[in-house]
Image 1: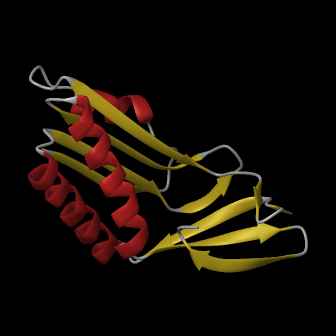
Image 2 (image 1 turned 60 degrees about the vertical axis):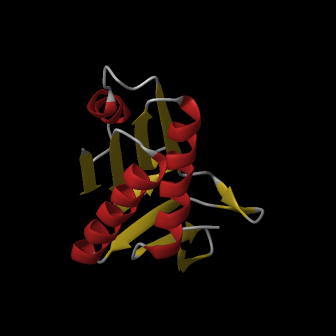
Length: 138
């Protein structure tokens, strides 16, 4: 069971956790990626995220489906923000439930690592003296 979303509104971590809760799952792992105030020693004012939505949703769904199959996860919520985000706001929330904690950890890590490599989401870092587009990963 999957909940895949690109949102322009703040992400709801509790809703993601509630979605993945299952009586047959002994572990829930959650990753929350937030906007930090600096990158490479340079102060960040805010971030702008853009996505090619149809492809991004399809890729996010594919990643989550692979994680279900590969790690035996029960449910996955994968939500990503687009638009302007301020320091401290959540850019991505991934919640995974699985029968055992190791599978939940592994599936969650797989989802975020693969998302950063394959999903067409781009971020613009805005600084006091300019801005730069970068891939949505370090």
